[in-house]
Image (cartoon, rainbow, N blue to C red; front, side):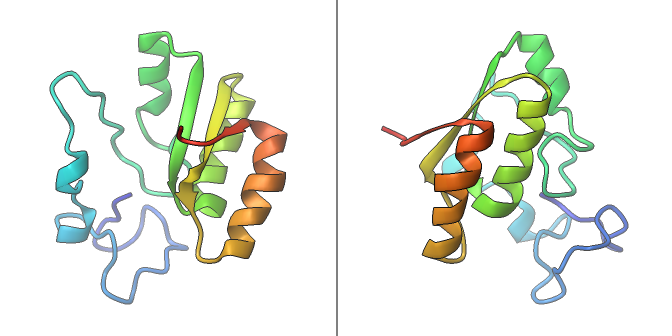
Length: 127
């Protein structure tokens, strides 16, 4: 996720402390361990919680003939759930990684993985 200087892309963003995810800053870069390799697809223009809104994700999915989307990430009850629900509504087979996601608390993680995931996806472990 990357925000522009004026946060016009996502006005509800709470990034004032530390200028989190601001464009052209160190915390908007892809970490070294996850740098794209040759042939990897890159999702561009993610300005909000849902990985579909405003990005090229749906185009890449159609272009590659993808039918199943496996989702992991942070925050479970924000970006992961938003993307999961949109993928489900678009007719994709959705798989969510119960131990490949994280929340701010164990209670939040439990609600997401034990209740919300089961409504819109097939929850599995990374193994």
